[in-house]
Image 1 (cartoon, rainbow, N blue to C red):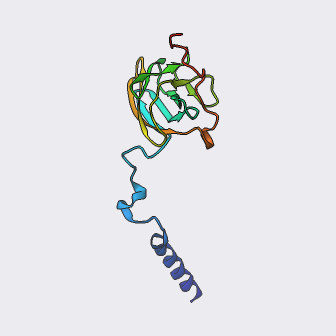
Image 2: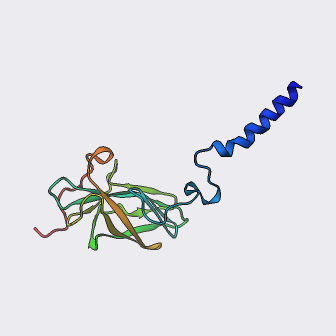
Amino acid sequence: MKRTHAAAAAVLAVLAVPALTGCFNGQAATTTTQATMNSGNGVEATQGAINIEAATLVLGPEGSSTATLTTRIVNAGLEPDALTYVSINGIPAYVTEGAGELLPGASISFGYESDAWINSYDLDATAATYVPVEMGFEKAGLVKMSLLAVPPVGYYEGIAPNPPTNPNAAS
């Protein structure tokens, strides 16, 4: 008799799991679908063999019109590629010279714990807005993204354009 009760309790426990799960709503549950729009910082994009990871636009110091694009770019292909062009809000961005060379299987971090930078020196955007960003690659082609502009606080504290002024500007 005790085995029968134990078996019945086990069956009831198994059957009760879906009903007791807070997120369970079947195939229509919002937890089983992904958003089609950007939902915040850390945008991901793929173009050919190039993967762009955790792309976020960090606004410069208060009162400036600067910003730094923080991201990691990975070449998952078998051939070298190169970042040849970046525009932020339609204006060409500064990319650290030589930093865009991507060997097969290599990755480059930009703007955070890195010596490579992608900077805008003429950005007219406020925090919590989305800014159009284009990145062109020699072989993979053009990637268009919409990146969240965030203030340089919290996790992003201390991230600012390096160099602080545009080295390509006329003196």
